[in-house]
Length: 166
Image 1 (cartoon, helix red, strand yellow):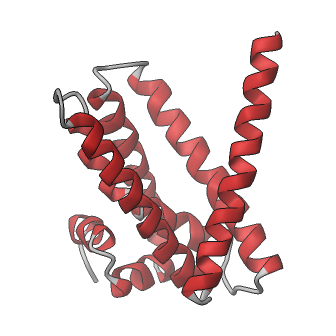
Image 2 (image 1 turned 90 degrees about the vertical axis):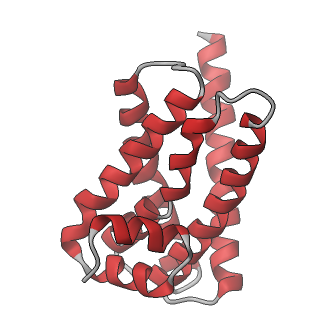
């Protein structure tokens, strides 16, 4: 069994065995939550302290839980994947590990490059996490992620419009 640090690195390196281990280890849920919180804090620091650390951590945890639930519903019911919400929660939590690099986002001229690279990297780790947790093909995992992303975008736009109207 890998340590937390080995799992973080393994997830970032797209190591399938790491994702399989995290998926099967029900005790890894708190470890995955730690990845999510630290990733959110790294992003907040990298954005020159924009917002509060507590707000970033809470937002990260809520977004993570919602994203795992959404991918579970799409993956299990539309694409007939075999996973539980907890399995997706754990694998998607560790898939956030490349976001630790967002702490460097404040660096002039290259901060935005780091952000773009991390965005793409997390997209890929997320697809691997979805594929491994749901035991589906890469193509189906991409479809799950894409459909979920569209739903999240629509919800974000809708809630944004509601807050502007209020």
